[in-house]
Length: 79
Image (cartoon, rainbow, N blue to C red):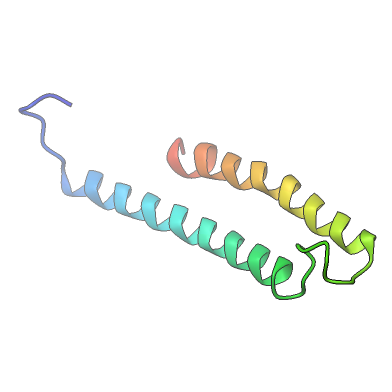
């Protein structure tokens, strides 16, 4: 962006909604993951729960993180 370029109201509005959509997506994903992992002790190996619960949680974590990144990059910011 050069020195003389100015943002129009539509550009500012579009950037604001992209930022809010990104923030909403990431906060929602983070809250679900944290409440599930920390709230139910599925993220901690010394919590006394069975191994399959840890496997499910970490599969969720590893499986959904790329999806959230892909949605952020392709659907929100390049859309």
